[in-house]
Image 1: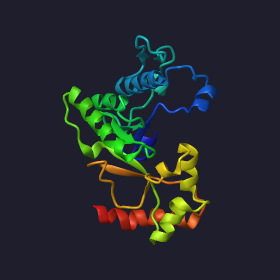
Image 2: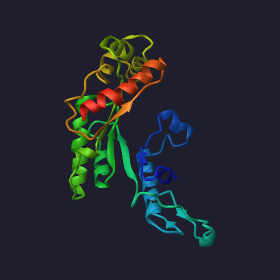
Image 3: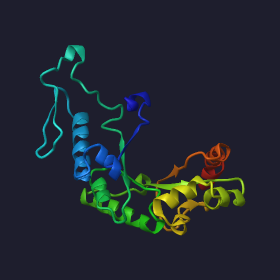
Image 4: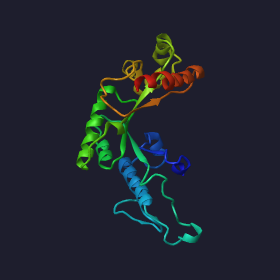
Length: 236
């Protein structure tokens, strides 16, 4: 539906997700969530590729899809409509762990990687190397244009504000986030961008702006305005 509403501007973002507490709440804490994730994607792609009535029953896959008993073409019943984009929308998967094996599978299946914003910069090249390996296994050549890197970004009109709200002020949502996530502010400082690019990453296609809660709405809004109007035009 989103793909049709957006007339092909939809990007399908995927991830195993489920933090430990979420997984327990959903009753999948003891499950192999990567396997569960893979099974779900296989079925989604099969629905997009096939015509109704569906008979999707992959060996070992817990998800079975059929509308054979209720399919009525003249009423549009039992039909799951295909995406606006042909053959499918771009699929982007998040990558978190250094030297991730999952990103190899993304390359093999022509999914595109998005490196998480909380990954330390020196691990970023490992994502590209594994993605390129996956494309090679599929007989394809990897394009850096398909690689996105998410970074925690705050842009201000002056250096003092950037440093204060970005990492020093006790009310900084960036500082709060990284202290809670990593428990070590010295490591977290490397994630908040103050320069135009990170040489450690190498060439990549897009940077994804990862913002934080609007403790100061004016600064948060101004950051996005500066990013769009001042920073990005200067990088192109």
